Image 1 (tube, rainbow, N blue to C red):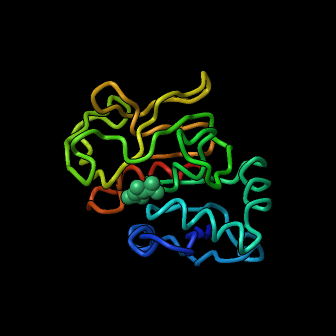
Image 2: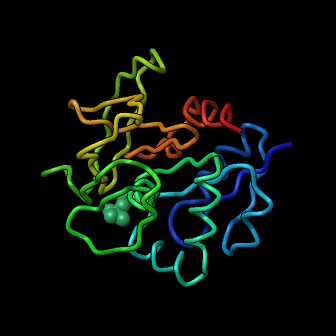
Length: 188
Ligand code: GLN
Protein backbone atom coordinates (compact mmCIF):
# COMPACT_ATOMS: atom_id res chain seq x y z
CA UNK A 1 0.00 0.00 0.00
CA UNK A 2 1.43 3.36 -1.08
CA UNK A 3 2.25 6.12 1.37
CA UNK A 4 2.18 9.80 0.47
CA UNK A 5 4.52 12.14 2.30
CA UNK A 6 3.34 15.66 3.11
CA UNK A 7 6.16 18.15 3.25
CA UNK A 8 5.16 19.52 6.64
CA UNK A 9 7.49 22.43 7.29
CA UNK A 10 4.99 25.25 6.76
CA UNK A 11 1.81 25.80 4.75
CA UNK A 12 -1.42 23.94 4.09
CA UNK A 13 -0.16 20.35 4.05
CA UNK A 14 -2.98 19.23 6.33
CA UNK A 15 -5.67 19.88 3.70
CA UNK A 16 -3.70 17.81 1.19
CA UNK A 17 -3.53 15.04 3.76
CA UNK A 18 -7.30 15.07 4.19
CA UNK A 19 -7.82 14.75 0.42
CA UNK A 20 -5.56 11.72 0.10
CA UNK A 21 -6.89 10.09 3.27
CA UNK A 22 -10.42 10.45 1.85
CA UNK A 23 -9.20 8.53 -1.20
CA UNK A 24 -8.01 5.78 1.13
CA UNK A 25 -4.29 6.58 0.86
CA UNK A 26 -2.17 6.85 3.98
CA UNK A 27 -0.02 9.90 4.54
CA UNK A 28 2.89 10.79 6.78
CA UNK A 29 4.47 14.14 7.55
CA UNK A 30 7.91 14.73 6.06
CA UNK A 31 10.20 16.92 8.13
CA UNK A 32 13.65 15.37 7.82
CA UNK A 33 15.62 13.32 5.29
CA UNK A 34 14.84 10.01 7.03
CA UNK A 35 11.12 10.56 6.45
CA UNK A 36 11.74 10.43 2.70
CA UNK A 37 12.70 6.77 2.98
CA UNK A 38 9.17 5.85 4.01
CA UNK A 39 7.23 7.44 1.14
CA UNK A 40 6.25 6.63 -2.44
CA UNK A 41 5.16 10.14 -3.42
CA UNK A 42 5.42 13.64 -1.97
CA UNK A 43 3.12 16.64 -1.67
CA UNK A 44 4.78 20.05 -1.65
CA UNK A 45 2.02 22.34 -0.39
CA UNK A 46 1.19 25.99 -0.75
CA UNK A 47 2.39 28.38 1.90
CA UNK A 48 5.28 30.80 1.88
CA UNK A 49 7.95 29.57 -0.48
CA UNK A 50 10.74 31.61 1.12
CA UNK A 51 9.97 30.13 4.54
CA UNK A 52 9.56 26.57 3.25
CA UNK A 53 12.80 26.96 1.26
CA UNK A 54 14.74 28.10 4.32
CA UNK A 55 13.37 25.20 6.36
CA UNK A 56 14.23 22.73 3.58
CA UNK A 57 17.84 23.94 3.83
CA UNK A 58 17.88 23.99 7.62
CA UNK A 59 16.62 20.41 7.84
CA UNK A 60 19.13 19.20 5.25
CA UNK A 61 16.32 18.22 2.90
CA UNK A 62 17.41 20.00 -0.28
CA UNK A 63 19.89 17.44 -1.54
CA UNK A 64 17.91 14.29 -0.65
CA UNK A 65 14.76 15.82 -2.12
CA UNK A 66 16.46 16.62 -5.41
CA UNK A 67 17.97 13.16 -5.50
CA UNK A 68 14.63 11.40 -4.93
CA UNK A 69 12.78 13.61 -7.40
CA UNK A 70 15.47 13.12 -10.07
CA UNK A 71 15.29 9.38 -9.58
CA UNK A 72 11.57 9.38 -10.28
CA UNK A 73 9.63 9.95 -7.07
CA UNK A 74 6.12 11.24 -7.76
CA UNK A 75 5.62 14.84 -6.59
CA UNK A 76 2.44 16.86 -6.39
CA UNK A 77 3.20 20.56 -5.86
CA UNK A 78 0.79 23.43 -5.41
CA UNK A 79 1.48 27.16 -5.43
CA UNK A 80 4.51 27.69 -3.17
CA UNK A 81 5.38 24.05 -3.89
CA UNK A 82 5.51 24.88 -7.60
CA UNK A 83 7.81 27.83 -6.86
CA UNK A 84 10.13 25.49 -4.95
CA UNK A 85 10.35 23.05 -7.88
CA UNK A 86 10.93 25.74 -10.53
CA UNK A 87 14.10 26.29 -12.47
CA UNK A 88 13.95 30.08 -12.09
CA UNK A 89 12.05 32.30 -9.66
CA UNK A 90 12.00 35.72 -11.31
CA UNK A 91 13.42 38.50 -9.19
CA UNK A 92 14.00 36.45 -6.08
CA UNK A 93 17.17 34.98 -4.73
CA UNK A 94 15.56 32.21 -2.74
CA UNK A 95 15.98 28.49 -2.24
CA UNK A 96 14.42 26.44 -5.02
CA UNK A 97 15.21 22.98 -6.27
CA UNK A 98 15.36 23.54 -10.07
CA UNK A 99 13.90 20.12 -10.86
CA UNK A 100 11.01 21.29 -13.05
CA UNK A 101 11.78 23.21 -16.23
CA UNK A 102 9.49 26.18 -15.63
CA UNK A 103 10.19 29.81 -14.72
CA UNK A 104 7.74 31.43 -12.35
CA UNK A 105 6.96 34.93 -11.16
CA UNK A 106 5.68 35.06 -7.58
CA UNK A 107 2.43 36.86 -6.71
CA UNK A 108 2.02 37.75 -10.35
CA UNK A 109 -1.71 37.67 -11.10
CA UNK A 110 -1.99 41.43 -11.57
CA UNK A 111 -4.70 43.20 -9.62
CA UNK A 112 -6.07 39.87 -8.43
CA UNK A 113 -2.89 39.50 -6.48
CA UNK A 114 -4.47 38.40 -3.18
CA UNK A 115 -6.88 35.68 -4.25
CA UNK A 116 -9.59 34.74 -6.69
CA UNK A 117 -11.58 31.72 -7.84
CA UNK A 118 -12.34 30.78 -11.38
CA UNK A 119 -13.62 27.82 -13.40
CA UNK A 120 -10.90 26.32 -15.55
CA UNK A 121 -11.74 24.25 -18.60
CA UNK A 122 -9.25 21.45 -18.92
CA UNK A 123 -9.34 19.39 -22.13
CA UNK A 124 -7.26 16.84 -20.25
CA UNK A 125 -9.72 16.32 -17.40
CA UNK A 126 -12.85 17.12 -19.41
CA UNK A 127 -16.06 18.50 -17.93
CA UNK A 128 -16.99 19.67 -15.37
CA UNK A 129 -14.43 22.51 -15.17
CA UNK A 130 -11.86 22.52 -12.42
CA UNK A 131 -12.48 25.14 -9.76
CA UNK A 132 -9.25 27.09 -9.53
CA UNK A 133 -8.60 28.68 -6.15
CA UNK A 134 -5.69 31.08 -6.60
CA UNK A 135 -4.06 32.56 -3.51
CA UNK A 136 -1.18 34.94 -4.23
CA UNK A 137 -0.37 32.51 -6.98
CA UNK A 138 2.80 32.20 -9.02
CA UNK A 139 2.56 32.72 -12.76
CA UNK A 140 4.29 30.26 -15.07
CA UNK A 141 6.22 32.50 -17.47
CA UNK A 142 8.09 29.86 -19.42
CA UNK A 143 8.05 26.08 -19.63
CA UNK A 144 10.29 23.55 -21.30
CA UNK A 145 9.44 21.38 -24.29
CA UNK A 146 8.99 18.29 -22.16
CA UNK A 147 6.53 19.98 -19.81
CA UNK A 148 2.94 19.02 -20.58
CA UNK A 149 0.22 21.62 -19.97
CA UNK A 150 -2.90 20.00 -18.48
CA UNK A 151 -4.86 23.19 -17.84
CA UNK A 152 -4.58 26.87 -18.69
CA UNK A 153 -6.20 30.04 -17.45
CA UNK A 154 -6.08 33.04 -19.77
CA UNK A 155 -3.58 31.20 -21.99
CA UNK A 156 -1.14 30.70 -19.12
CA UNK A 157 -0.46 27.18 -17.87
CA UNK A 158 -1.83 26.58 -14.36
CA UNK A 159 -1.47 22.80 -14.14
CA UNK A 160 1.58 21.11 -15.64
CA UNK A 161 3.20 17.71 -15.63
CA UNK A 162 6.64 16.44 -16.40
CA UNK A 163 7.09 12.71 -15.98
CA UNK A 164 6.04 12.11 -12.36
CA UNK A 165 5.95 15.76 -11.32
CA UNK A 166 2.50 17.37 -11.23
CA UNK A 167 2.35 21.05 -10.32
CA UNK A 168 -0.49 23.56 -10.00
CA UNK A 169 -0.36 27.29 -9.45
CA UNK A 170 -3.74 27.03 -7.70
CA UNK A 171 -5.04 24.95 -4.78
CA UNK A 172 -6.94 21.77 -5.78
CA UNK A 173 -6.86 20.65 -2.13
CA UNK A 174 -9.31 23.42 -1.20
CA UNK A 175 -12.19 21.97 -3.24
CA UNK A 176 -14.12 18.70 -3.07
CA UNK A 177 -13.09 17.76 -6.60
CA UNK A 178 -10.40 15.10 -6.22
CA UNK A 179 -9.80 14.32 -9.91
CA UNK A 180 -6.34 15.87 -9.83
CA UNK A 181 -5.33 13.86 -6.76
CA UNK A 182 -6.74 10.68 -8.32
CA UNK A 183 -4.66 11.36 -11.42
CA UNK A 184 -1.58 11.90 -9.28
CA UNK A 185 -2.10 8.52 -7.64
CA UNK A 186 -1.69 6.87 -11.05
CA UNK A 187 1.99 8.01 -10.93
CA UNK A 188 2.73 5.84 -7.90
N1 GLN B 1 2.82 33.84 -2.55
C1 GLN B 1 3.36 32.65 -1.98
C2 GLN B 1 4.85 32.53 -2.29
O1 GLN B 1 5.36 33.28 -3.05
C3 GLN B 1 2.64 31.42 -2.49
C4 GLN B 1 1.21 31.46 -2.06
C5 GLN B 1 0.58 30.11 -1.88
O2 GLN B 1 1.25 29.09 -1.78
N2 GLN B 1 -0.73 30.11 -1.76
O3 GLN B 1 5.50 31.71 -1.74
